[in-house]
Image (cartoon, rainbow, N blue to C red; front, side, top):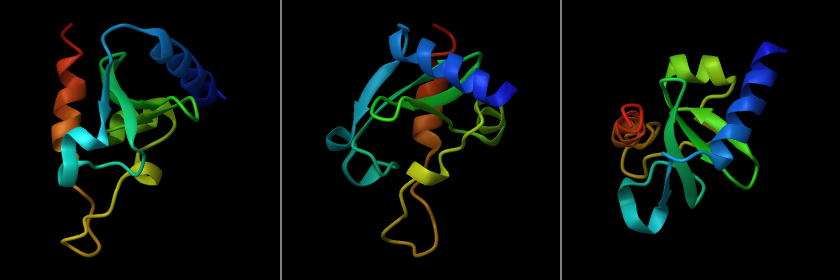
Length: 103
């Protein structure tokens, strides 16, 4: 129940908060790590997260943030087409989200 409440609070504050950056697949090309074409990315409570407006959900980009938010990015994390069985490198997006923590 705590996770659900935390997810709702994060999603609602994330949807309206400043300090988040909208990023789009077309800007990243092959380096795009998500299965959706657009996300908001930032830092919530010191944790790197992405937010998808369409389903109003926050997704933790790291294990710790996934645990805090109640949802990890596995369901929206894209497969690496060059390396079967692996995912696209998410570290640039974690770093981008963390850059918003100091703002």
